[in-house]
Length: 347
Ligand code: NAP
Ligand code: ZN
Ligand code: ZN
Picture 1: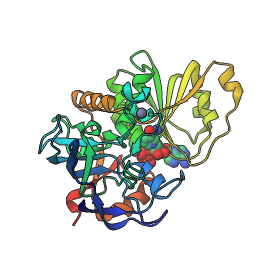
Picture 2: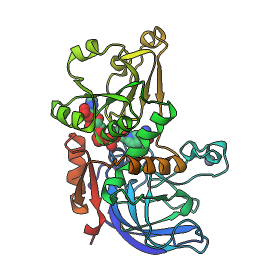
Picture 3: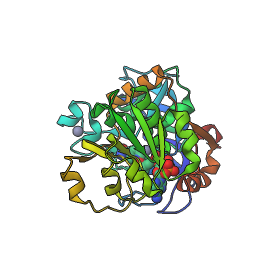
Picture 4: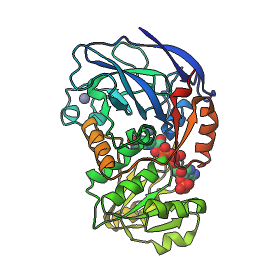
């Protein structure tokens, strides 16, 4: 075993604190990564506070991991020492079900093994990227293109792939109008990626303070969801809506903004359900859909796409000692647009 350290929530809702733990020893297929950066995803907060249920404690969160390869196992084919690599939301899957075979490991029938708050084949809980090192099977490791900075690339490992995958799946492109709901970590990357795909983007936000940011990121229009007139002005405007909102809100209001045959894609995961009204869906043959992250192959394609289009996350880099303050600021929507932990600060 390999002694390492990080920051953990010892129980639901407890502040994160320094924590020593062990990684498995590097097996033949494994890569040992020295973590340099890890993004703070809103899912880290949902899970550290056990808002979705099933969290495993103590929990070292973090699934937007970038670092350098420190050691490779004897059978590792695709990575060597000093390569710059990434790890996203999962570190294993069954590898044999139809989903795994087609590269959609996130939909593995046996369930993907989450990077943290999962339980590996050895029965041990997995621990995430708010830590000094991680050991991961090479098949679940990504390559970071040289055009991307480590800190700016880290959030792509979750926020990037979570928005890229549904846009690709539904073929969102040049002739479509897309609304992105919520301009946070996911939302701001969605705007950049959709613009690079040639899509016309409108940002729907609760915060007037984000109007200028939305325009700078490439949105053609911006509207406040606190104003009732938004929901009349934009009626039947969009082919697609990508909803990245982390808190409960009324989906029915947004469905009315879809054209006939339009699709609202949920990626945000509020901790409470919403009642759906059937008529707005039925009368315009509209759809509500969902999507979770993306497979390994697609995540690599997303990283390469972002390198080609010079897309990185807008970030605020913090030392790990500020992680609890950062959580509070994310909850207030007070971050432009992703906190990234510099693991060099971990003493
Ligand atoms: P974030 O940075 O906190 O952004 C969420 C945004 O939602 C906020 O910036 C805010 O945007 C809006 N919002 C927050 N509270 C709201 C409220 N009460 N009413 C309306 N809008 C509100 O979070 P994130 O990291 O982007 O994650 C967003 C959600 O996606 C989380 O629930 C997360 O767990 C989930 N997620 C899902 C996947 C997946 O695979 N499906 C992957 C990663 C994350 P404005 O200020 O613009 O209103
Ligand atoms: Zn995430
Ligand atoms: Zn599988």
